[in-house]
Length: 105
Image (cartoon, rainbow, N blue to C red):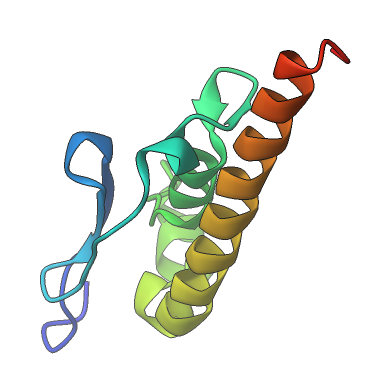
């Protein structure tokens, strides 16, 4: 990792309503229902965090020559995406609960 960039963490802390992006940035105030919307076995927010994590390739040549992905380059986009997916997740959970109440499911 670059010395001047904060270390990427991309950790979800649903019980606190937070996402820790890096050493300097925490998104807080995420509603509990945003974590309820699941895609398979994980919340949509967890999927995003997993997709944007920095992964080190096992192959040394690939790691040295082609592994140019840095979370810091996409940080603002990821923050925007997390906000939008959080809003959609909350709304989807509301709609599903309304449908369950009215027996449409």
